[in-house]
Amino acid sequence: MGKKRIYITPDGPYEVQGGIPLRVQKTTVDEQGASVDWVPGRKYEVEETYHLCRCGHSGEKPFCDGSHERVDFAGAETAAYGEDIADGTLEYSGPELTLIDNEALCASARFCDRGINAWYAVEDSGKEENKALAIEEVGKCPSGRLTLKDKAGDVIEPSLPQAISLMESTVHDCRGPLVVTGEISVRSADDHEFLPRNRMTLCRCGESKNKPFCDSTHVECPHMKGFDE
Image 1 (cartoon, rainbow, N blue to C red):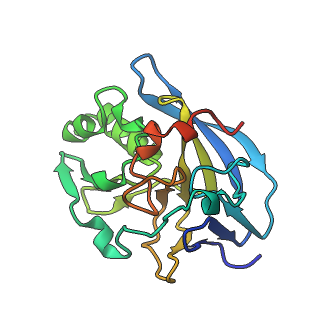
Image 2: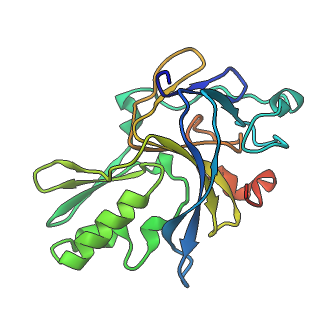
């Protein structure tokens, strides 16, 4: 297998290289409509190189069928490449944890809303149960909108495999973004590398204003209703 990376083709699909595992993951929700956990679904047999739909209109989702040409898809990236991706982030400090919030990356997965929510859990992280809740909720945030640091300033991150997951959002009853884990390299159409991150979500509805990253627009897209399974 070659290097695992995702190459964004000009106004076309994601070209996935290196035989990256591809699977479905569905969210479960509680009575208040907050996401609780990830439930693994179908695992795809993948080749060394394959192409995933980026315009949202493929009839063979999650794979590309050439529909981007039919719909005249405009897929130019607008997100920052390197450390500038953190511009505009906010920090919330508690006694044991600091929460870093980059709202521009939000994929509306809603893991952060369970219980007293991640922000209040950090604010009251002197209590062990709230500290544990914050670490759990932030670690399940697929987009990396939320990250945590401990009192020493060290980043707290879950150990995640190099993989791509097709998010199925039970909260919104729709297909969500591509959840990319394990610091896989993502390169733009003009061959710039986006900042590698342990958790990120890539738009697959075609409508994000922060391409290639998800900005939650899929929630309102009629062509993203339903699931891949």
